[in-house]
Amino acid sequence: MSKIALGNESLVGSLTPSNKKSYKLTNRIQEGRIPLYSVVFNSIDARFFNCFVSAGGNGINLYNCLEDGGISSLHSYTDEDNEESFYTVSWACGVEGNPFVAAGGVKGIIRVLNVKEKMVHKTLVGHGDSVNEIKTHHMKPQLVLSASKDESVRLWNVETGICILIFAGTAGHRYEVVSVDFHPHDKHRFVSCGMDTTIKIWSMKEFWTYVDKSFTWKDDPSKFPTKFVQFPVFTTSVHTNYVDCNRWFGDFILSKSVENEILLWEPQLKDNSPGEGTSDVLLRYPIPNCNLWFIKFSCDLSLNYLSIGNQKGKIYVWDLKSCPPVLVTVLSHSLSKSVIRQTAMSTNGNTILAASEDGTIWRWDAVTKVAESL
Image 1 (tube, helix red, strand yellow):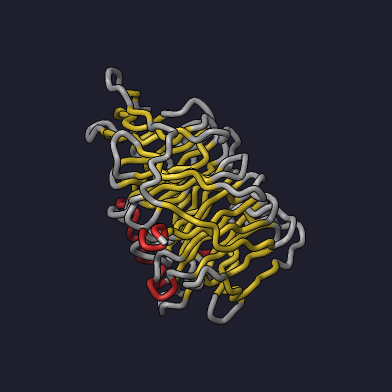
Image 2: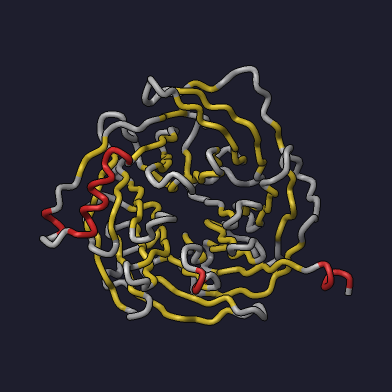
């Protein structure tokens, strides 16, 4: 377990908006009255950067963001199990370049949809409880991680349907895992967090032969020699409560608990002592009315901005390149009063989507300086 470094004063951002970038509401879609828990842009395939997917209840909906602010529907999927409730969805890609969507929820089953064929490509079974988050590998988009209430993280090959690695056991999480994220540059590394208040960094380097084998395996996927990984390379507790969202920021980590703030911190691993190290909290991003769990933030592809909703239906947009932290703007609308469970930022940060608990998707677009002056 890492120790929190003492003597370093973290910098807290001001809640006075700089208005260095402005957004206007351009659209909203009422999918129904079922809570929406996830909304995600496709950031792994440049052909579909304008496409996004939402998940809630037993439905998955795919859309295209139009340049004029419109939103066009591409495809809707309704799960065969009426009791399914999807909590998470992620874009993936087949080996031949076909876009996939992987979704999971309360049933612990992951549906992999072939977007082009508009059909279920694979059903991934293995988790013993709810799937809280799915994340796709940036460099190998056939690989996805799933974080589960069963206290494990699993690595899957969505092309072949194989469960490659299971991260759980002796030094694993002791309560449900809520969030995972692949490192942006180190293909072997990822971070996980959960309701046991810990954040763990795991390495797959020693087990990468299993990943390679998952692409050439010809036998039944259930007969694949799935490997258990029981020891992370780093464990820390920078929060004192549930941790429900974590994202890499280079080699730094952004993480959120139910404490009305997001932290940026640096994990410092000890080479000769696996699992140990220090955690230096550098920056704090205050988020008022955000002490409810399962509210997740998002960033643009270049990690210039971060956006997050709160319990009052507002969205806070932070500049990630500023130190001390600078609040860019606060987005609000008189009709947006429900909890925003997740935001999604387009690759360039100019469009922000918000998935609301009242079943609404909100679209905000950046206002150019020319438009502001008119």
